[in-house]
Image (cartoon, rainbow, N blue to C red; front, side, top):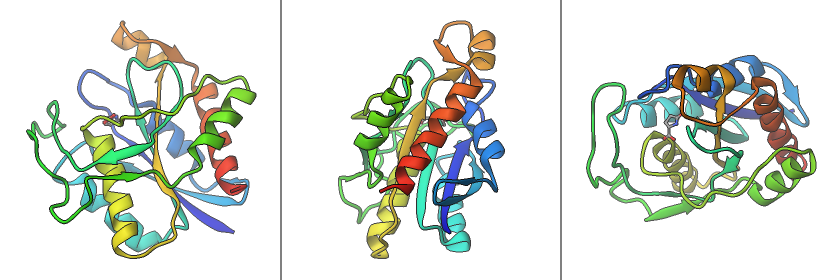
Length: 202
Ligand code: PCA
């Protein structure tokens, strides 16, 4: 059985709940397609989350990594195409606001996702769930985490499919927030399970 490291994030900014946290916690220890899921929740912290993730990679030695993040305001499931070597954004949960910084000084300007993003989108749509490839993961923590994993895989010559998927808000979050579109938790979770199945068929 292959092992998948599935990560989510804690709440941040005006988002009092992070739907990715509940999804990864519920999928932890389950088997989906050819993968056994091992979940971890990451901090929204520019100084910490990269190192946190590398520690999980070294400890769990997964065959693949799928990281999830909330994109409050998006209304589709959006596998990300690329992570860029930039940290810049709103305050993280420790109040850091990096400006035009690089993530890794010796890193490439960008790394493409090595997850089967086109097949994931095709299958989600076939299953009736709105989805599209996103061409920007932003420059906040989600981009940061996606970049760190792909950089680590490259530096260590690992054949480890890795990448990031942004998801819309859950109804629970949207009602608290008041100004963003949302999906049911069940549909968000089903979407992620479909993505893991597609990865397993790769
Ligand atoms: N989404 C943020 C960081 C944490 C999360 O769930 C992002 O898109 O960068």
